[in-house]
Every structure is written in structure tokens, then in C-alpha cells.
Image 1 (cartoon, protein in one colour):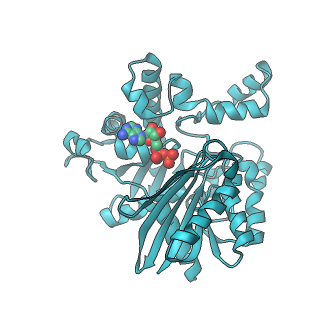
Image 2: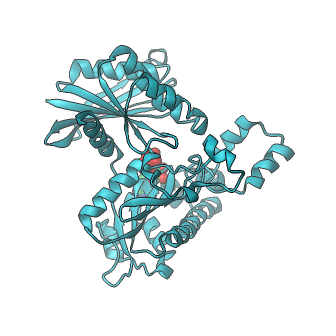
Image 3: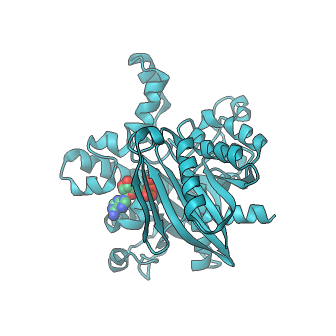
Length: 389
Ligand code: ADP
């Protein structure tokens, strides 16, 4: 049986999935090595949720991502019965040129390394397992799937910042992220509502959060820009901020670039506002004023950004919730849907509480959907398509 390995490497975790290739793609294994460098722990589950591995490792055995990739590779070689035909990687940044997934070789890796300054917290982690596999299994096909690629069909005018145009050529421009999620959801929408729902906003509300305007299935606008900091407030990231605030922090607080990066990526968003947690579940369960402020602000900014994206689309036919908060929290969906009322969106409380696919009522001018995302399946599909080419 031919299989595809999908790898999603973050700063302290390596997530991976195996898909069997037999007509369609079937998920077989889902695994995660987390606590890399601190308290490494490997969990692997089979298709039915059965536990295939649940093991702690000494810290020195898995000090970094390359070590985690080697260990996962060893586990798969020993225990996985399929024939691995390719590995698909989530790579956050494909720069201005990659409109599609790319077959990986040394040259492509070198090119992708150039985008590290644009995504310093993600890109090096995404590339680390690629390097390990290139070194140890040079003949194994690898494919990079980019979070930016889906947005590369934007009108270039929309991707400019109003600073001297020479910076655009250097790469200082809007890119947009979460593209694999949006692409998957766009595909599902085409199945759910074929031919209709031309002007759609998709809200990917997870620990990272953004919204995308889709016109006939294609991205025309995104709340994320140059980095994954823009737009909505997120779990720990600030979202849209007046650049004057950054100048103030540099000049009046004497902050270093590293301190500023830490503040904006790790200490802001819901965590910074609430002073309690970056997790919406904790905030919903709390009666603390900071928690209420953080959730109110989050919902308010989603509403504002919906207006912005509806303006980009010239109207709205459908609104889609996806990712951790969007898929699992009827309370948050209801609060957000209230902000969409003026656009003609009307939620059906029963459908919403039941977590149905269509959660708007029959009279709603805007259809509201809950569509679970599946970035890993999207990567597996792309990987298969690239190697078949
Ligand atoms: P990631 O961006 O890390 O992939 P997810 O899409 O899995 O994240 O979303 C994780 C976030 O989803 C959590 O931090 C939490 O805030 C939120 N979440 C998950 N389940 C629920 C729930 N039942 N109610 C509210 N929020 C939830």
C-alpha cells in the first residue's frame, strides 16, 4: 500500500499524519511529538483513535526538531507497514513567487530559507525536517505546501503597503496566511453549495486567527499581511496595531527588536488583554473582567474585519466558521453572528447549538456554515498531485 506522510513542524512540536493512497486518500495515522527540548512526548493514534504510541523520552534524546524527525522516521520505518512514496510539508512562507506547492530539492530549500526573515518563528522550523530527510533519504520525494500560495492570485494593488514602492520589490508586501485551510474550506463549499455562495468570508479562528474573502472560491483579500501578526487579535499575537505604537515602544521604552517580537507574538492578543489565558475555553469559563474584555474585543474585531472584507467583495453571500473556536464554540459563533446581522446574516440557535453544517436560519440573506478544516488532507492532496505530475 502506497502512503504519504504529512509533516507540520512548529517551534516545540512535530505533528505528522499518514494517508493511504488508494483511489482516494485515507487517514491512517495521526501523531505528535511535543515538548521537544523540554519534555518530549510522542503520541500516535491509528485511524480509529487506537493508541499506537504514548511515550516519554529523555530531554537529551530529542533536543530539537531534527532529532524529533529522525525519531519519528525510525518509528515509521519499524512500525508502519505502508510504502512511503512522498512527504508533504507545511511551509508557512512561499514568498511572492510560489503560487503552487513545490517539489523540494536543494535549490528550493535555499530559496525558502531566504524567506526566514519574513517568518522568523515558523520558517526555520518548517524547513528543519525537510533538511533531515534530504540528508538521510535523498531519493524520497518531498513537497512544500505553502500557507501563502492560495492568496497569490490577489490583485497586486491590494497587496501593497503605502510606503515607497521600492520596498514592495524587496518583498515588503502583504502575503496572507492560513491558505491551506482556506483552500480546503473553499473546496468543501464548492461541494456543499455548488455554483452558489459567490462572495464568502471564511473565519479561521484557532490559536492563530484570520479571515479570508473568497470570490468564487478564490482568495481576493485576507486580514493577514506581511507576517502572521496582522488582522485579528489571536491567542498570543496582537493583530492589527498602529505602527506608531511600535515606534513608541522602541523610542520611549527602549525595547530591543527581540523584546518587541516577543511582546507582539507571545504576550499579546487574548493572553495579553485578559492577563489570564490565550485559550478561549478558559476565558469563557472565567468571570474575570480581563477575560470579558478579551472576548468582547475579539468578537468586536471579527465584526469590524467582516465589514472590511464584505467591502472588498462588494457584498456577502456566505460566512463560514472554521478551526478550533469556529468549529467548537456555539457561544462564540452566536456572539460573532450578532455582529453580522447588519449584513443580513441570521443564525438559527438550534442548528448552531447542534453544530450543523448550515447554522443560519431559512430566511437569512447570508448563509452561515460551520466547516471543519483539514489542512493535513489538503497537503496530502497537493503532494500526491505534485508527484503524479
Ligand atoms: P491551532 O491554530 O493551534 O491549530 P486550533 O484551530 O486547534 O489551533 O484552535 C485552538 C484553539 O481553539 C484553542 O486555543 C481554543 O482557544 C479554541 N477552542 C478549541 N475548542 C474550543 C471550544 N470548545 N470552545 C471554545 N474555544 C475552543
